[in-house]
Length: 389
Image (cartoon, rainbow, N blue to C red):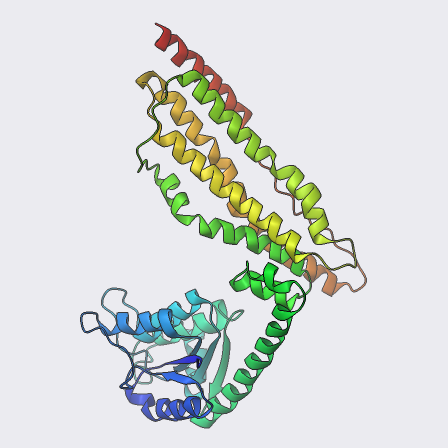
C-alpha cells in the first residue's frame, strides 16, 4: 500500500507546479492526490470544497500545501477558500504537513503586517490570502513546516529530504514496536501519545501523562456535550426509595473522586520513575487511562442522576446532585493543558540555567464543594419531609 500525498493549491496559477509535483510523488512510489487528476474521487452531489476536504480526511497520509498569490475559490458556507479548508482538515487529522510559500509574497506579507489596511489587490486576488499565510507561519508555526520557493524544483528538493526523514523515523518506530514487549503497550496509544512514547523527548513522561488524560477527555466528548447542555436523552430508572437512592449516588461520587489521590501518589510516582531513570510506558498508560475512566464515569454518573425518575419533591435534590460533577469535570479537563504549560516552563527554566533543577506538580485533586454538600443535605431533608407529609 502506497502513502497518499495530498497536494493542495490553487489550480490555474500553479498548474505546472502541481503537475511537476505529481510526477515527483508518483516517481518515488507514492500516490499523488490532486483534484484535477482523473483518479480523484468525486461525489457529484457535494460541492467542490466538501469533496476536497473529505479526501483529505479519508485518504491523505501527507499534506503538501503550495501557496502563490491567489487565495482561490471561496466556499459559500464557510467563506474560506478550498485550500484553506483542506489545510484545516489536515491539521485536524494531525498528519505531516509541508507548506511552500511563493517567494514573491514575502515582501507583500511584510507590507501587510506593517499596515493591514493597505490595498494590495493589484498583487493578490483576495485580502484573505495574507492573513491565511500569516496564520500558518505564526500561530501554527510550532506544528507546520513552511518553506519559501521560486521554482517547482525547490519544492521537490525539500520534499525528497523530508520524506526520507519520515522514512527513517518510521523505521525507528517500527524497530521499537517490534522490540520486547513494546508492541503490547504501545498498541494502546495513538497520535501524540504514541509519538511521545516512541520518541521520548526530554520530559516525555510528564507530557505523556498529560496527553493521555487529554485523550480520555476527548474520548468522552459526547458525554460531556450532553452534560453541558443538561440533556436527559435516555429513559431513566424508576427510584423506589428516593432518600436512600440520593445518598447512595453521593457516596458513589465521593468514592470515585477519592480514588484519584492514591492512583497518582503511588502509581503515578512509580510510572514517572526515580530521578535519572526513564519512566514506564505501561504504568503511565495505566494511570493516564484510569484518570480518563474516572472522567467518563463521572459524566455517566451525571447522566444517571439527570435521567432518574424521582418524585416532584425531589427535583431540587436532583438538580443539586447534578451540579456536584461540575468542579470534578473542570479539574480533569484543565489537567492536560495546565500540565503541558508547567512542563514547558520547567524545561525552559532548565535550558536557561544548565545544571539547575526544577519541580513539577502533577497532582490532580478532586474535591466536592462543602457548601454543595450542605445544600444537598438541606434539600434532602426538605424533600423527605414533604414526601412523608
